[in-house]
Length: 122
Image 1 (cartoon, one colour):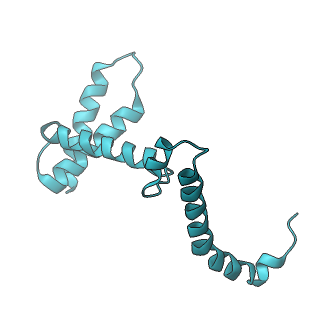
Image 2 (cartoon, rainbow, N blue to C red):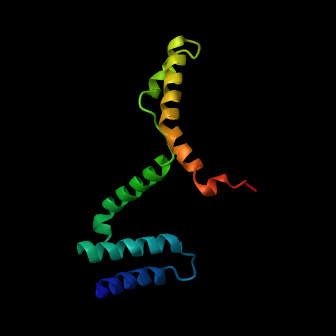
Image 3 (cartoon, helix red, strand yellow):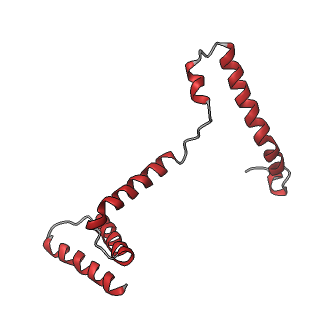
């Protein structure tokens, strides 16, 4: 494992010697170094041979981070096609509200019964 790490660092230093007097994006270089070391130790090949896999993993990580805070309620997308003044829309929104109140109200009561929850804020 250590010889593979040394070989990866030597490849990086060779690239750096070519940039004599120029700025180097160190973030990208260390990202490439990390990927190269992982590739050599885990798979026995260089990063460039498996670059497509690492690019896909990077894209997947971006998608996960982007979608982390999106909240989806099953069936709610169909509500947007109904006029907000119609009785079906009002009925559906009330059902969704009642569902979430019934789902979360017992948990809120448990939290409020804890001793630290009764302290005044400020």
